[in-house]
Length: 117
Image (cartoon, rainbow, N blue to C red; front, top):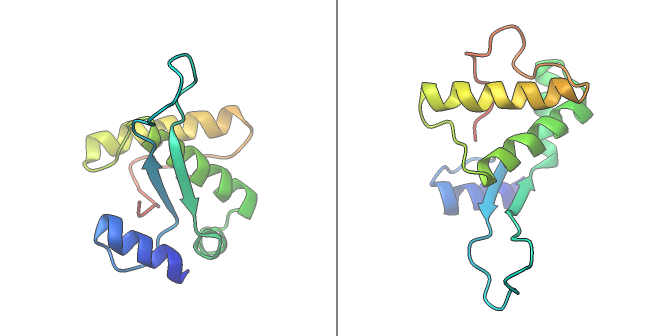
């Protein structure tokens, strides 16, 4: 958890651990023109995810899936800096997860945000 707190502090100026961080790949020198461009890296803090899952009454597997979807959407350019963007991102997360057999991570209300990233 200390490592995630350090990353969150360094890259987001929030001195606390968080559940997931995404780091876009950007340009990669020497990558062949016909190569698929990697999206980037997703860092997940297992301890935070485990604690959140328990607190939120979710299975660890479902919460891990949510964090991976959440992180991937960030790499694709989605964000939740304002209510409108958060609603779009949360609706996408819910649709992706439910289409794959995982319950709505936000419960009944999509307007309530349960993540800190």
